Image 1: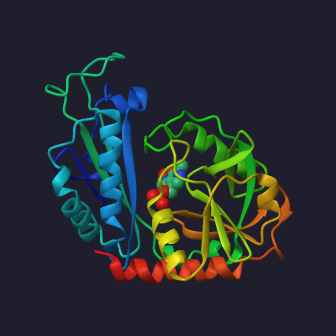
Image 2: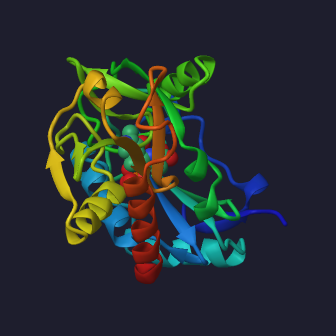
Image 3: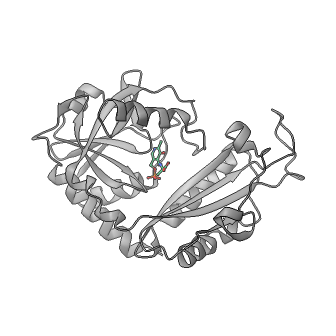
Length: 287
Ligand code: PDD
């Protein structure tokens, strides 16, 4: 089956979809994105993603596209026509294609934002074997720009970070700034000590994860303490458990940091419980 994608108001077979070579995201990474997961054919936390998308657009002064209010319908239609039971919807909005390269932003009156959405089919997304095995993490310096709260498509360093981890025999990297963990290459980072989850507080240093917000809410409801504060890699190595969250990985255990096993080196019980609660509650609220 050829995948159907959405480009600037049209549903098209993926091989007919086109974006200009002058698109600002292609030339300058001038665009924002969202990834929304699909479980059982329904969208997880769509409202949270739409709200963050609007904030990202506002922060970069990118005009809201005309289809902004139709995004839920477009997501649903792509999930329907591509027969996605479990998977992801990727959405990207860029400052558009002014027809030349210029550092000055194009006039929003004459240059429309580019809107692209496509699905990724991932059967059994919530039953990923990695959730049972756990992830190995290496630490790397965080050399990204200072507005990581905006979900831009400027993902070269996170992608390089992922490759540094793979080359070191690990699964992902946690980035460190001034001695403290910021986040994973494409996820938020947590440690657990006793009955307390510790994760960096929200600021411009990290992406305000939609999964993070839900998991911290569920944790508090389950009487698990939450401390939003900085932590170091040494503190993480000494933690009882660790995990990451993202829209595509949900809650995923971490079993090793820079070669040091956490606890008994297997996924922790509290992390497993949080994953279960997150998946149950998210499926219930999916639309
Ligand atoms: N990444 N931090 C970073 C740097 C991220 O790229 C992501 C998400 C997160 C988690 O945010 P959320 O829970 O809203 O997915 C944190 C997506 C999944 C990606 O780039 O594929």
